Image (cartoon, rainbow, N blue to C red):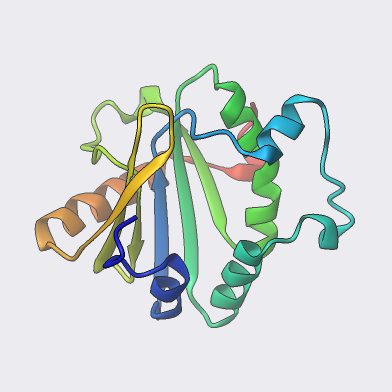
Length: 171
């Protein structure tokens, strides 16, 4: 990541109203948690201390300040193994205060979508994620270009309107 790009926590800390995240990939770089899940290990959701991470706390603190955090995922169906795992661990996102929705990719044909995942802060500042082919973050980019912000904001809202809330989306 470029050193000129502010950290996620800093950007979220500057947020006053909203942060939205659009995810477009069916697979990201595997993590230890994903590999453990593939081996059959499951999270004890009752024991929050065992799975609660600094990210979860950051989200919870931000939501407590009155910032709305929404995440929309556009996924191919049938879903990949990685997406099945993401659906499972989304319990942590929801517990932290995010609203999460899922939309089958087949429903996105008429939506102009950006080529990359992004976070949009207060409808004005974008943090764009650039990934390698195998899902590793190569670089993040910050932009406030009005045309790019408008495209991403419009795309997110169109996906959000069509997407299924997490608790109703069945894998």
